[in-house]
Image (cartoon, rainbow, N blue to C red; front, side, top):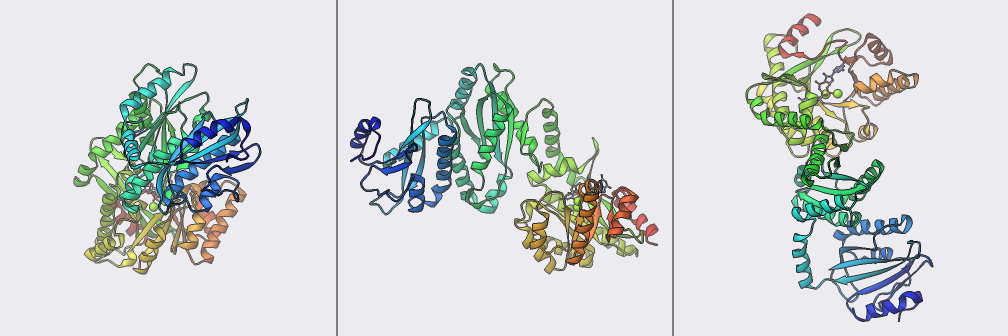
Length: 554
Ligand code: C2E
Ligand code: MG
Ligand code: MG
């Protein structure tokens, strides 16, 4: 019994093992690069470390694997970079020798160190919970600080008070559009995801970094720190360890409040972190925001938008503006894009940049889009009735609802209701990082006979990937892409080749945000004849559009 264990530990381990027959023990020596099982029932001789043994022998239930991965990563990190903890533990569903079933167990790694604090050996043990213990554990969890805001608040206070020489940060994070995860993958998967977050945070956070699940999918961590890089480092660690659970696609967003007034109630710091987190929503690039005092007024604006949006729709405060699209060579209007405007009688025109992200987040965008689609169809009918030759109008489709709403059904219904040719309504979808669902929608819309435009091409996401898999008809070159790339020889070459490539594969092309004659000339020389931008016309009220169409296309 107990072969190969360094003498200094042997005596202690004999005692532990003798008194605890249900538990299986392993010993890994980092220094000597050896790994042994101390339980006869477990044969470990073909393995060099416990994680590999458990994984390769299929002894961990699938559901427990993501947390197990975090557990292993943290151990590796402790071995390589050192860590303050003396142990690391987590609950996993494991199949122990002699049993055919998976059982909930506590897995525990005890770190043994040399005089410099470096981890030299790890004593692992795996202990199954008895049904009673398991029940007690669940009851205890209810009272633990990661479930109980009052205890949590006391722990936060202690963290502030016991670190007088350090700065303190309150970090709050949640899953962007968690509602959609529940809709798309089911509530059960949503719950599993949150449980995984809880278990992983217990492994990631140190004792002096209390964490808590505040509500639904909102988590908070309080941490002492010296430099801002430490906070960013912690956030990146959380992000990387908590991403990709069960093959789901989601993004975490973080609000951070650095404590200024240490005597203030911990709730205040938490509220500030929350504010920063909520303001980040809708920002496609950043996912970390540090609180500053100006944020209160921004949030206020957002709340005002949310309070008044429903009435605004009923009162007809949303208007469809049309921005004509031109042929560069003939100067004629060849189409138009429908863009929403909000004319609030109290504050005047509100820009889409302000309200669209808010609507995308709270789901109201679907109502607005249906309204704009209908206005566009109505407009085409109106032109036809007035005997003005209509041009195709493109409308925007937000990716928020593409998987959950019957877009094709709705649009076909509108086409029928206004009895307009299908070729007169075109659809724009923005390229995004998350392409799932787009391919299917575009394919189906095309089968139904619609023209599909890829909006904002070149704005930074996986443009080329999506082109490969999704049968769009037309690329809309993004305004910033054009502006930025026009500036250099290399950039101009890229635009030129983008245009010729799109022609090569049979795609139409239009440039948006054309602001100068020079840009128009350049595009034309490269073979792109369609343009939309302030150089030709700003978006104009729907009424003015008729006049413009008549006078330009006469
Ligand atoms: P987008 O679909 O890419 O629309 C083009 C935007 O570029 C419009 O901004 C337009 O006014 C602006 N633009 C056009 N030409 C120029 C130019 O030469 N220079 C500059 N600086 N800007 C130009 P807008 O109307 O503010 O809309 C912004 C974004 O909001 C749109 O980008 C679209 O993503 C979204 N959006 C607007 N209306 C709707 C809507 O009804 N539904 C949905 N889902 N999104 C909408
Ligand atoms: Mg658009
Ligand atoms: Mg665009």
